[in-house]
Length: 110
Image (cartoon, rainbow, N blue to C red; front, side, top):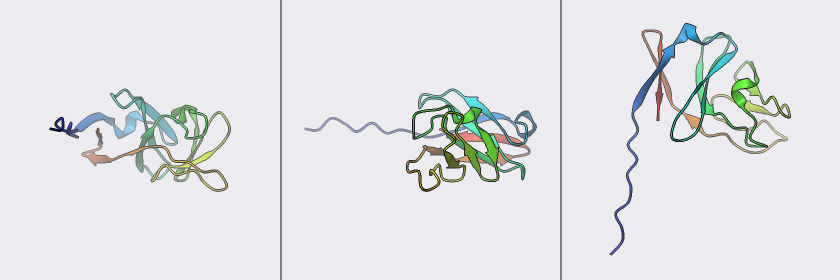
């Protein structure tokens, strides 16, 4: 008989108000998955990625946000905020997390 599979239940966690993250900035949320970087771009779009570049593990939360990308502070890899995918010619992907905005409050699905 197989051991029962562990079911991971996801739930929404309140992170902060939108204005608590500066435009072109990020905040870090601690989780069981590791640190999660929550970004705000110039258009006030909110994104969340595992705070770890797929190249050498650099802290994406400390990178420069431009458009819908973040530049890793270690080796300047460009990572898409919407999907976590490295821009060619680089390859790799940072784990992405769902975010939602309700009444100017950011929630993260973890």
